Length: 331
Ligand SMILES: [Fe+2]
Ligand SMILES: [Fe+2]
Image (cartoon, helix red, strand yellow):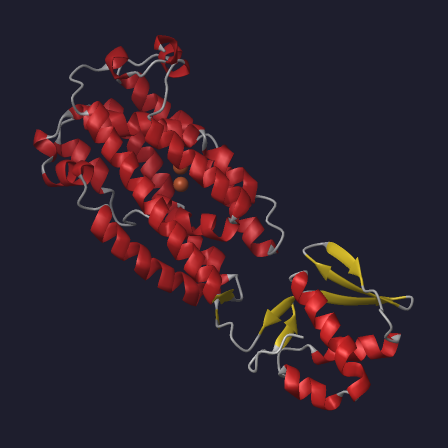
């Protein structure tokens, strides 16, 4: 028998009663309850007690001594099949509250591990002296990232837990579709041809980021949503990277498409999407928040690696055009 004093069992599923049978439904999965010696009414009354307001001791006091064993077995079975929550010890926050906590944590990580990295410290503090390859490299790897965006955005499109979240994500997906082609215009201005683009390989760090996001999209949608705020959440007033391109004296033909993409993000308030999504989520438990924080640490490391790899690979390249292309055909 589950005996913890503070344990206030609460059903983590819906109860459906039809034709003398009781079913428990969780995530679309329906399980018919085996009466196991209890009458239908007894079973229904057992389930009514599992409301998260009473401890096991409270409930037992209301039952006959002869029912204690059967009630205990039912609780153990429900627990084994993950159909029970503990309302006594699980601390819940609203989605927005949980996100604020996660954002605080993320901002600390970004301060410690990202804003001062080799890429941003060179590009933002000293754009005039920055090798142009650092800017071109970001455009190229950004292209690779956006080209694969459907790979990591699409797993969350059928998000079944919340209609409003599903709609928000689908709207975002439609808005993002084809953004790789905007970046292609910048690449063409550098003398990179369509044939080069077809033959072009991303840096391993870029592909790692895409693959990790696809994995999180498929296995942990809630965490995936939280990464969008970092990926899309640039300064809503101005894009410092575009400003740095101008200070570095890069050609308008290169900058214009990059600015067009940045403007779509800022005007479409893509940086705000994570907050809109979490505002629709009613409750997030401590365990989920802790899991998201652990994963955020890995995500920020990968995001930092993405920019550092761009600096390391592209900034030494002095020429434009084919010289910037990592070729599949060269392997
Ligand atoms: Fe985009
Ligand atoms: Fe965007």
